[in-house]
Amino acid sequence: MHSLEVAQCFLDDCRDFLFRYDRTIDSFSAIKSRRLKCFNDLRAAYECALKCAVAYHYPTDTDRRKLIDAVEKHRHNIESLESTVVQLAGINNYGIERKAEVLNGLPVSLRYTLDGLDFLAAHEERYYYTVGSDNWLTSFRTYIEHVFKALDAQLSKHSAIISAADIPFESL
Image (cartoon, rainbow, N blue to C red; front, side, top):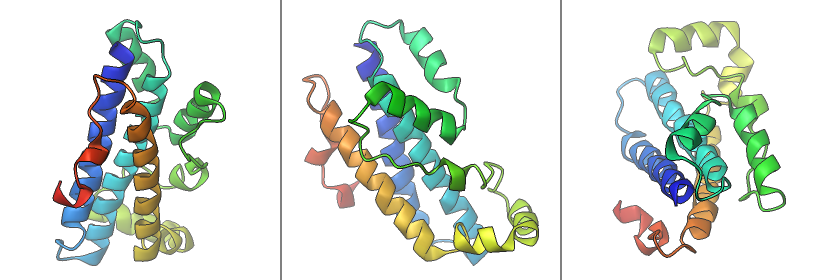
């Protein structure tokens, strides 16, 4: 049961990061600061979705602490998490696409305005193609919701897991 519990915790975190993104995307005074902070919520949501998938595929009787350590050893490494999900889930990979190439080029440290300005100066094209683009952020958010729903559907098959699909996403 530990793998289901841990997977559900990561899925709950994914939903919470998406919720915070939705509620704060229009709440910042400075557009660059908004994009940076909201991007980090999306990155964290995606990381949590991947960690959910990894935890789900461990045997249900795996020691809880060992399971958490195994999942968290990936830290913020999206490439490592995606590879592990593909390895563990096989063909059933919850619609996960390879996003690591883009995301690993956007450091986790992109949460402060000064860091964002330094990144913009050093990688202008990459900035405006990704975190500097409202369209890219919206697309990434939509993709994460798709992965979230696929994982939620899988977890809801287990009687101890209540499906988030039973709660209207807009009311969260």
